Image (spheres, rainbow, N blue to C red):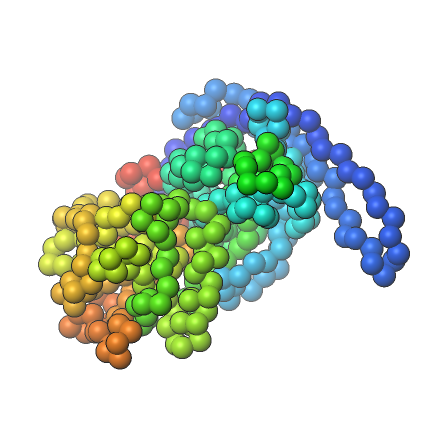
Length: 407
């Protein structure tokens, strides 16, 4: 497939509203010396109008690395150190300037509300080296909007969309050498993080917040890519309460899944499927991924106020419509699982995980579809189309990719 031309969208840099933080040295014995933290460097930007033809010229505080020697074909999905991250702080009612941090450490007050009360939310997206050697980031504006939703729920000031996008682009530029080469099937995983960093000892919202964007190069979440797995139905744990925080991407949701997910993986099930916590009758989502299924010519995904609105799920649903399928967002009863032609888990890390069997918790193993050992053609087509768009191999007809200016 031939690569198609992409439109470069420029973004204004945030206004410099805050002040650079200071640090205090602590003298301790050498054997117990605290780690040294790099002094943050301000990211200098020339602001221009945010139109589809304008550009934002950015001069990094330090020259990004250009030579990185990694085994790109065998990255796996794990954290690897990079050149650094970018961050800014919210103080006195305003967001300050972006700073570049050149080491993988974070200074935080011991009384920070993120540590004591879980006032923390995040996002996950990816940047890709494309067929024409440019670097594109996928659906960044959707992630910006979703982070605002999470922030509202946790009483955190929203990160303005242009600040979010500028920070993401700066983090990618700083770490451009860590974007896996085209053809290796890898990506630069981008993790925006927003949390209360001010000190409060009673249960209340912070008066200071930190927003940062870190990145790390990753390969396929599952070695071998799109291959069927067996999931486990969770009967002993719940993911989220009906009127809780399941619909936003907050840190506590994932902490709650650590124990059941670890137990299931030890038992041989790489992913676990949750039911609604109130009636235990309708399907919610997998531990870290949305649920979708095919039934005749329909793309079916559950409708529940406790489910995180997955950007990948929305992407797949849109492409399914492009391919002539109908999309049904509705309650999915547990008894309907056996009626589906195929079931998948979807998310940023993996795009699609084909679920061929489900251990139902009562000793039965439910097989999905007529040939559970083979990924169905419709699922393959959706998976390959998403990847082709991300790598610039086909037309980005929905305008999902933003090209990162590296010069």
